[in-house]
Amino acid sequence: MGNNKIRLEGVSVEYGTGKGCRRSWFGRGKSAGGTVAPSTRLVLDDISLEIERGEFVSILGHSGCGKSTLLKVVAGFTQPVRGRVLIDDQKVKGPRSDHVFVFQEGALFPWLTILENVSLALRWVKDSVEKKNKAREYLDLVGLEGTADYYPHMLSGGMRQRAEIARALAARPDILLMDEPFSGLDYLTRLHLREEMLYLQVMLPETTILFVTHDIDEALQLSKRLIILSEPPARIKCCRTIEAPHPRSLSSPMLSTLRTQIYHHLGVHAAL
Image (cartoon, rainbow, N blue to C red; front, side, top):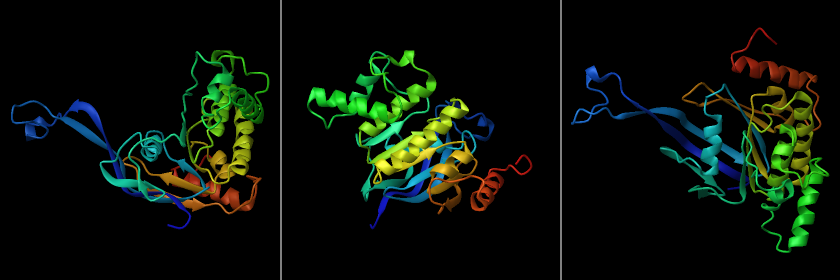
């Protein structure tokens, strides 16, 4: 289907609340035996979206609106109750090794060194010496020279996140799913990691990237397209393509105008 990589068709996701229905005086939520049935909450509502191969798409929205859930559906961790997700025109039935998920809270193995953590992604390299050398190359790429023998607890939060990105790169992912990977980092570290994400797009032009963030400036600098989700149950509220070439200046008239429009879509009007 042309250059289309990911397609969501009418995707809806529900989560169980784990609580019984309280409005039992109307007869709702009760089984024949009088027990209270668990209720559900609709998180994503009829999401339809197409993403091209090699596209960098940022997903914005208020906390709790379903951004992470959308990533998990694409990754195959969560199955929709309605609709379907297609990758390369094949229905997603579960996670795949060439679809890499970078978690918000980090997922380095604490009992392995940084080099060993990155080496885990190098399944395509059979020779052990070559595997170590390749892992060091990816660590160097994200500015982690000299940290190969360190354990995760010996690194700062920003350095651990760089190691996560190095491991993601080493896997040569077909699709890269990133759930607020820079949250909790200091401002300068975030700026450095933004630069590395731009290098990533140059290195892996065929890799499709979905990037969840709350940082509008981050999304404007990195993305080819922005998706804004509504309040839950989430629908696609706005979709904007950014044609400006990299590197981008946020002070440019086009990005400045788009930035204001995005804030307005998110309900912010005065503090700009």
